[in-house]
Length: 102
Length: 170
Image (cartoon, one colour):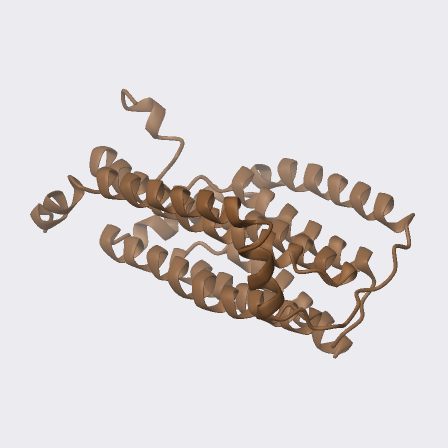
Protein backbone atom coordinates (compact mmCIF):
# COMPACT_ATOMS: atom_id res chain seq x y z
CA UNK A 1 0.00 0.00 0.00
CA UNK A 2 1.10 3.54 -0.68
CA UNK A 3 2.86 5.77 1.78
CA UNK A 4 2.27 9.41 0.83
CA UNK A 5 2.95 12.59 2.83
CA UNK A 6 -0.10 13.56 4.88
CA UNK A 7 0.11 17.17 3.69
CA UNK A 8 -0.17 16.03 0.07
CA UNK A 9 -3.39 14.22 0.87
CA UNK A 10 -4.76 17.30 2.62
CA UNK A 11 -3.80 19.51 -0.32
CA UNK A 12 -5.65 17.19 -2.73
CA UNK A 13 -8.68 17.28 -0.43
CA UNK A 14 -8.47 21.08 -0.26
CA UNK A 15 -8.24 21.31 -4.05
CA UNK A 16 -11.35 19.17 -4.48
CA UNK A 17 -13.17 21.17 -1.79
CA UNK A 18 -12.35 24.47 -3.48
CA UNK A 19 -13.53 23.15 -6.85
CA UNK A 20 -16.84 22.32 -5.17
CA UNK A 21 -16.95 25.76 -3.57
CA UNK A 22 -16.38 27.42 -6.97
CA UNK A 23 -19.20 25.26 -8.34
CA UNK A 24 -21.61 26.48 -5.67
CA UNK A 25 -20.62 30.11 -6.20
CA UNK A 26 -20.61 30.12 -10.01
CA UNK A 27 -23.39 27.81 -11.19
CA UNK A 28 -27.00 28.88 -10.85
CA UNK A 29 -28.69 25.62 -11.91
CA UNK A 30 -29.95 24.02 -8.71
CA UNK A 31 -28.84 20.51 -9.75
CA UNK A 32 -25.27 21.75 -10.24
CA UNK A 33 -25.37 23.35 -6.80
CA UNK A 34 -26.40 20.02 -5.24
CA UNK A 35 -23.62 18.24 -7.18
CA UNK A 36 -21.06 20.77 -5.96
CA UNK A 37 -22.21 20.24 -2.36
CA UNK A 38 -21.62 16.51 -2.94
CA UNK A 39 -18.10 17.31 -4.19
CA UNK A 40 -17.36 19.30 -1.02
CA UNK A 41 -18.68 16.55 1.28
CA UNK A 42 -16.58 13.98 -0.53
CA UNK A 43 -13.45 16.14 -0.23
CA UNK A 44 -13.98 16.55 3.51
CA UNK A 45 -14.34 12.77 3.80
CA UNK A 46 -11.07 12.31 1.89
CA UNK A 47 -9.28 14.45 4.50
CA UNK A 48 -10.73 12.25 7.26
CA UNK A 49 -9.57 9.06 5.54
CA UNK A 50 -6.05 10.42 4.96
CA UNK A 51 -5.78 11.34 8.64
CA UNK A 52 -7.10 7.92 9.65
CA UNK A 53 -4.54 6.23 7.40
CA UNK A 54 -1.75 8.24 9.00
CA UNK A 55 -2.57 7.09 12.55
CA UNK A 56 -3.60 3.62 11.36
CA UNK A 57 -6.93 3.94 13.17
CA UNK A 58 -10.45 3.15 11.88
CA UNK A 59 -11.90 6.49 13.12
CA UNK A 60 -11.29 8.25 9.81
CA UNK A 61 -13.30 5.62 7.96
CA UNK A 62 -16.04 5.82 10.60
CA UNK A 63 -16.29 9.57 10.02
CA UNK A 64 -16.50 9.01 6.25
CA UNK A 65 -19.36 6.59 6.93
CA UNK A 66 -21.26 9.34 8.77
CA UNK A 67 -20.50 11.88 6.02
CA UNK A 68 -21.92 9.41 3.51
CA UNK A 69 -25.09 8.92 5.58
CA UNK A 70 -25.57 12.66 5.82
CA UNK A 71 -24.97 13.07 2.07
CA UNK A 72 -27.60 10.43 1.28
CA UNK A 73 -30.25 12.11 3.48
CA UNK A 74 -29.35 15.55 2.13
CA UNK A 75 -29.58 14.45 -1.50
CA UNK A 76 -32.96 12.76 -0.95
CA UNK A 77 -34.51 15.88 0.60
CA UNK A 78 -32.70 18.26 -1.76
CA UNK A 79 -33.82 16.46 -4.91
CA UNK A 80 -37.44 16.35 -3.75
CA UNK A 81 -37.18 20.10 -3.15
CA UNK A 82 -35.85 20.41 -6.72
CA UNK A 83 -38.89 18.49 -7.99
CA UNK A 84 -41.21 20.80 -6.03
CA UNK A 85 -39.36 23.82 -7.41
CA UNK A 86 -39.73 22.62 -11.00
CA UNK A 87 -43.38 21.84 -10.29
CA UNK A 88 -44.11 25.35 -9.00
CA UNK A 89 -41.87 27.57 -11.13
CA UNK A 90 -41.08 25.39 -14.16
CA UNK A 91 -37.39 26.31 -14.00
CA UNK A 92 -34.21 25.03 -12.38
CA UNK A 93 -32.58 28.44 -12.12
CA UNK A 94 -31.94 29.42 -8.52
CA UNK A 95 -31.87 33.12 -9.45
CA UNK A 96 -35.37 33.12 -10.92
CA UNK A 97 -37.07 31.80 -7.80
CA UNK A 98 -37.18 35.09 -5.91
CA UNK A 99 -38.59 36.95 -8.91
CA UNK A 100 -41.76 34.91 -9.12
CA UNK A 101 -43.50 35.68 -5.83
CA UNK A 102 -41.18 33.13 -4.23
CA UNK B 1 1.35 1.91 -5.47
CA UNK B 2 2.33 5.51 -4.74
CA UNK B 3 2.18 6.31 -8.46
CA UNK B 4 -1.37 4.89 -8.57
CA UNK B 5 -2.37 7.28 -5.80
CA UNK B 6 -1.05 10.33 -7.61
CA UNK B 7 -2.52 9.29 -10.97
CA UNK B 8 -5.97 8.76 -9.46
CA UNK B 9 -5.67 12.06 -7.57
CA UNK B 10 -4.98 13.81 -10.88
CA UNK B 11 -7.96 12.02 -12.45
CA UNK B 12 -10.18 13.09 -9.54
CA UNK B 13 -9.16 16.75 -9.78
CA UNK B 14 -9.52 16.92 -13.56
CA UNK B 15 -12.88 15.12 -13.53
CA UNK B 16 -14.16 17.40 -10.76
CA UNK B 17 -13.08 20.46 -12.73
CA UNK B 18 -14.93 19.14 -15.78
CA UNK B 19 -17.96 18.44 -13.56
CA UNK B 20 -18.40 22.06 -12.60
CA UNK B 21 -17.70 23.45 -16.08
CA UNK B 22 -19.91 21.31 -18.36
CA UNK B 23 -23.20 22.76 -19.59
CA UNK B 24 -25.01 19.44 -20.05
CA UNK B 25 -26.01 18.08 -16.67
CA UNK B 26 -25.71 14.43 -17.74
CA UNK B 27 -22.10 14.98 -18.83
CA UNK B 28 -21.42 16.59 -15.46
CA UNK B 29 -22.88 13.58 -13.68
CA UNK B 30 -20.72 11.16 -15.66
CA UNK B 31 -17.58 13.18 -14.89
CA UNK B 32 -18.53 13.27 -11.22
CA UNK B 33 -18.99 9.48 -11.18
CA UNK B 34 -15.50 9.22 -12.72
CA UNK B 35 -14.17 11.48 -9.97
CA UNK B 36 -15.85 9.36 -7.29
CA UNK B 37 -14.34 6.16 -8.71
CA UNK B 38 -10.90 7.80 -8.70
CA UNK B 39 -11.50 8.75 -5.05
CA UNK B 40 -12.38 5.12 -4.38
CA UNK B 41 -9.05 4.02 -5.86
CA UNK B 42 -7.30 6.59 -3.63
CA UNK B 43 -9.06 5.17 -0.56
CA UNK B 44 -8.08 1.63 -1.54
CA UNK B 45 -4.45 2.58 -2.04
CA UNK B 46 -4.45 4.39 1.32
CA UNK B 47 -5.54 1.14 2.98
CA UNK B 48 -9.15 2.11 3.68
CA UNK B 49 -10.71 -0.84 1.85
CA UNK B 50 -14.14 -0.70 3.52
CA UNK B 51 -14.66 2.94 2.61
CA UNK B 52 -13.40 2.27 -0.92
CA UNK B 53 -16.16 -0.29 -1.40
CA UNK B 54 -18.68 2.06 0.24
CA UNK B 55 -17.89 4.96 -2.07
CA UNK B 56 -18.41 2.79 -5.15
CA UNK B 57 -21.64 1.18 -3.92
CA UNK B 58 -23.37 4.06 -2.16
CA UNK B 59 -21.90 7.28 -3.55
CA UNK B 60 -21.29 6.33 -7.18
CA UNK B 61 -24.15 3.82 -7.15
CA UNK B 62 -27.13 4.91 -5.11
CA UNK B 63 -26.77 8.69 -4.82
CA UNK B 64 -25.85 9.23 -8.46
CA UNK B 65 -28.76 7.02 -9.58
CA UNK B 66 -31.01 9.40 -7.61
CA UNK B 67 -29.60 12.32 -9.60
CA UNK B 68 -30.11 10.47 -12.90
CA UNK B 69 -33.74 9.67 -11.98
CA UNK B 70 -34.50 13.31 -11.17
CA UNK B 71 -32.89 14.51 -14.41
CA UNK B 72 -34.96 11.96 -16.34
CA UNK B 73 -38.16 13.14 -14.60
CA UNK B 74 -37.43 16.81 -15.18
CA UNK B 75 -36.71 16.22 -18.87
CA UNK B 76 -34.42 19.22 -19.38
CA UNK B 77 -33.97 19.94 -23.08
CA UNK B 78 -31.24 21.54 -25.19
CA UNK B 79 -32.46 25.05 -24.29
CA UNK B 80 -31.20 24.39 -20.76
CA UNK B 81 -27.67 23.79 -22.09
CA UNK B 82 -27.84 27.06 -24.05
CA UNK B 83 -28.97 28.90 -20.95
CA UNK B 84 -26.11 27.40 -18.93
CA UNK B 85 -23.62 28.33 -21.64
CA UNK B 86 -24.88 31.92 -21.60
CA UNK B 87 -24.45 32.04 -17.82
CA UNK B 88 -20.91 30.61 -17.80
CA UNK B 89 -19.13 33.76 -18.99
CA UNK B 90 -15.71 34.76 -17.60
CA UNK B 91 -17.09 37.75 -15.67
CA UNK B 92 -19.25 35.31 -13.72
CA UNK B 93 -16.55 32.88 -12.63
CA UNK B 94 -13.46 35.12 -12.44
CA UNK B 95 -14.31 36.59 -9.03
CA UNK B 96 -15.11 33.39 -7.12
CA UNK B 97 -12.32 31.59 -8.97
CA UNK B 98 -9.65 34.10 -7.97
CA UNK B 99 -10.80 34.26 -4.35
CA UNK B 100 -10.85 30.45 -4.11
CA UNK B 101 -7.39 30.33 -5.69
CA UNK B 102 -6.14 32.70 -2.97
CA UNK B 103 -7.64 30.42 -0.33
CA UNK B 104 -5.91 27.44 -1.94
CA UNK B 105 -2.56 29.25 -1.93
CA UNK B 106 -3.02 30.04 1.76
CA UNK B 107 -3.87 26.41 2.46
CA UNK B 108 -0.85 25.07 0.56
CA UNK B 109 1.43 27.60 2.27
CA UNK B 110 0.20 26.81 5.78
CA UNK B 111 0.30 23.04 5.18
CA UNK B 112 3.75 23.25 3.63
CA UNK B 113 5.27 24.50 6.90
CA UNK B 114 4.51 21.20 8.64
CA UNK B 115 5.97 17.77 8.07
CA UNK B 116 3.63 15.43 9.89
CA UNK B 117 4.97 12.33 8.20
CA UNK B 118 3.57 9.79 5.79
CA UNK B 119 0.49 7.59 5.84
CA UNK B 120 1.13 4.22 7.40
CA UNK B 121 0.41 2.09 4.35
CA UNK B 122 -1.24 -0.52 6.55
CA UNK B 123 -4.70 -1.78 5.66
CA UNK B 124 -7.36 -0.91 8.23
CA UNK B 125 -9.91 -3.54 7.30
CA UNK B 126 -13.69 -3.82 7.61
CA UNK B 127 -13.41 -5.75 10.87
CA UNK B 128 -11.67 -2.92 12.70
CA UNK B 129 -14.12 -0.38 11.24
CA UNK B 130 -17.09 -2.49 12.31
CA UNK B 131 -15.71 -2.92 15.81
CA UNK B 132 -15.29 0.84 16.09
CA UNK B 133 -18.74 1.55 14.62
CA UNK B 134 -20.61 -0.70 17.03
CA UNK B 135 -18.32 -0.03 19.97
CA UNK B 136 -17.49 3.57 20.86
CA UNK B 137 -19.56 5.05 18.01
CA UNK B 138 -22.78 3.14 18.72
CA UNK B 139 -24.77 6.24 19.70
CA UNK B 140 -23.66 8.02 16.52
CA UNK B 141 -24.80 5.03 14.44
CA UNK B 142 -28.24 5.24 16.06
CA UNK B 143 -28.37 8.96 15.34
CA UNK B 144 -27.37 8.29 11.72
CA UNK B 145 -30.27 5.84 11.38
CA UNK B 146 -32.64 8.50 12.71
CA UNK B 147 -31.20 11.00 10.23
CA UNK B 148 -31.87 8.55 7.39
CA UNK B 149 -35.44 8.05 8.64
CA UNK B 150 -35.95 11.82 8.72
CA UNK B 151 -34.56 12.06 5.19
CA UNK B 152 -36.89 9.32 4.00
CA UNK B 153 -39.97 10.95 5.53
CA UNK B 154 -38.95 14.38 4.24
CA UNK B 155 -38.41 13.11 0.70
CA UNK B 156 -41.74 11.26 0.77
CA UNK B 157 -43.63 14.29 2.04
CA UNK B 158 -42.03 16.75 -0.38
CA UNK B 159 -42.29 14.49 -3.41
CA UNK B 160 -45.91 13.46 -2.86
CA UNK B 161 -47.76 16.01 -4.98
CA UNK B 162 -45.27 16.00 -7.83
CA UNK B 163 -46.06 12.71 -9.54
CA UNK B 164 -49.58 13.68 -10.66
CA UNK B 165 -48.15 16.86 -12.14
CA UNK B 166 -45.54 14.88 -14.07
CA UNK B 167 -48.26 12.69 -15.61
CA UNK B 168 -50.19 15.71 -16.84
CA UNK B 169 -47.21 17.13 -18.71
CA UNK B 170 -47.03 16.14 -22.38
